[in-house]
Image 1: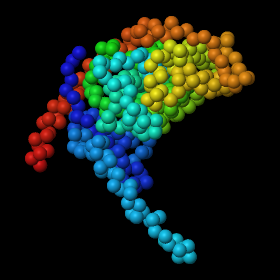
Image 2: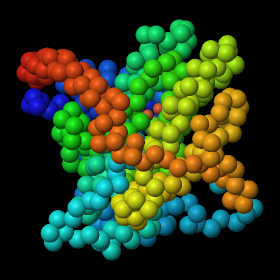
Image 3: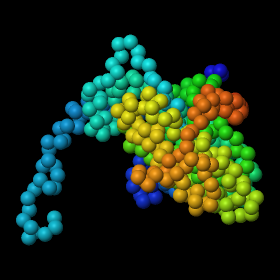
Length: 96
Length: 326
Ligand SMILES: [Fe+2]
Ligand SMILES: [Fe+2]
């Protein structure tokens, strides 16, 4: 079998037409950014899924460590005073 | 089905934990397992094999239908078929990408397909000898694929489940365009009607085989169910498919080629006759009508595209210093 040079991996983000933030939709392999954009357009926007694409080299992404999930995210769970429902407001104040 | 060959037992290495209580607890709590999470090696290997077989099936599945793109009977049919085959290429890509999150490279997966080590769905080793086959494939093969893929949207492995959500959104057009072809032919001239019946006669049994061996024989099923990679057994999915499809054949006015087929009033299910599992084993073992042709076509396409990949990489390497200087 022929030996192949690996194609760099890109992560693809698309902004839907409703004007939301770019959202991760998947990944693909391409030699460079221009080809990655073109492939992303062909693969991920064939049915009007969006009007803007970002492609990011997968190697440029730094991810949080799943083992640190507790340390990173559990502290927020006990801080219920960060949510509006924590505060009691009399009914006659109306919507607030 | 697309992942039918999964029913082989996964070997467990010496000293390797088969089950892990904490991991199983996450599965039982319907948590999604993500790429960087700890997982038993057997779970990883099972997924790599299943997802890559699924990906290979999408890619090889482009060949039988690609056969009719240039000969579609109208521009409308041609555009639809082209779009469908293009979707299948996309499905292959989503799935390869999901498999790669488990630590295997795309190049290695493609190599496994091309050198014949990897399996893909048996269904794509049958020939498409008439235009009606394109209708039968969309209706039956994509219909069976949908049955299998919908539960996979809830599979325990996050990247696979998300890929399946995208795939499922696209599949329903495939099935409807196939059914519409069958409907048009079945309401056409006697010759067209005969063509549709002939396609159903040839695709019916291979479509039932897509769901894999009967439950008694699929040793691997249990662990996949326990890991929530699989949510229904092969026979349960096959039954759903038969129940959904028999009434559709009536709408077409076509006869399902199974003299033993009957409706069981007690269970409210259609009961089909015996499946020729020897034929299934032969096709999986590489002896179907088109196995060699399919692999040869993939190898040819891969080799013919090699210069494009090399040129693109060479161009990217040349541009890089310039980009840094700018
Ligand atoms: Fe597909
Ligand atoms: Fe499809």
